[in-house]
Image 1: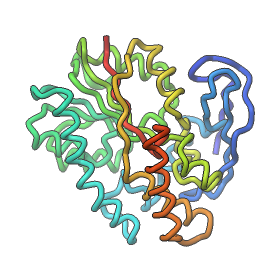
Image 2: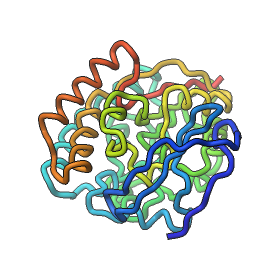
Image 3: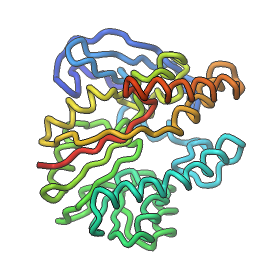
Image 4: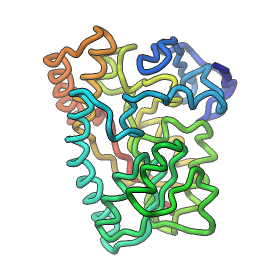
Length: 294
């Protein structure tokens, strides 16, 4: 494992950080990783983190469900059942934003389930997926040329670009957001789904909170830091929408991280509590951010 250390905040370029929390990689390596916080803008990030050359080894798990449609176990089965409902919700969202069907790009499209839903909904689709195995599944499912890097898509502009729990995995944040701005048509929409490290369940489970998911999650966003990052590239935040199911799923994984087995009562109770507290604070476990290009 080769680690690299950031000397500059990816959001504001400040160089002074403070320790935030130390977490274990429960999925693959069992190694501990530190999360630091910028003293200026409050952005939280895994530091040090695996290099670009070594990060791939931390995704090699049959339990990494976004790259694997066949993973076993009751938790993964529940995830897949809920996913069918949320896929329809996502399609309804993009249809409400852009009633006239157009072109959509999904970055980090995994095995292509969301794009399949969009294609059935009469959208023209394109996808990027770095993981070879997941990409092969997506190509087979969609009968489309899913690419490994955005630069392989030449000259196209899109009405909507989506990143469903993907930006937290991206190393070059500012460059990526700026490139997405260039790939959107004027007035186009960028949809970002992200965990919220200021949510109630994050504070309750602390270092065991499953959505820290170090070291695969390089960034640990809050509504404030998401807005600061993306607005720098010329986007305007139009809306945020809660992802209600995430608090329950994350709670299930978090109690398993802490106890070695799932505490179903606590997981569901804290998931519900997080959603109820989110109604007043806006600090839901995960949020969809709706950004509009000027």
